[in-house]
Length: 148
Image (cartoon, rainbow, N blue to C red; front, side):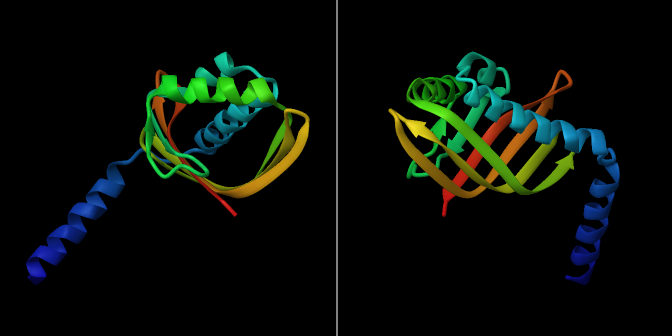
């Protein structure tokens, strides 16, 4: 039993050492990608938003009880949202970014506000987004959001 524990520890340490070091530029790029996604929403540009979403995207939305899967579903959802939501602005609070090779995740609190069909709204919550780096671009592959 002791041998297995020591072997597990050594393998874990070796795996950690094989990861390329996280750079400040990578952390900045992940955060900038999420900010650009929000900027596309603020500008009502679902096509630009789509450029940041991985084809294998999945999510548990703010009020979803079921997992949604697929980039097309996500982009269509954003397209419907920006058709009625105006003057939207989202704030990121206390982001924590972790990068392991070509995978990254960012956890943060958020607040947003705008209008839907002319009626003001605001909301907030906490979120985790997972990104993969492909062709030197960080693409969002999963989102999980919880309202306050």
